[in-house]
Length: 55
Image (cartoon, rainbow, N blue to C red):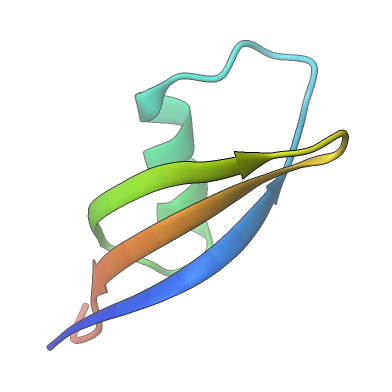
């Protein structure tokens, strides 16, 4: 089943790229299908995520 949610990822000093974001999402227990950064603030990236809930 595909589900969607909005998450916040804490910013770090390293350069952000799609591989690092997908790895962070996977480490949080999500199997990302589609994601997008929807907001950037001082400390966090807000990410809209669609994921495989059966993973």
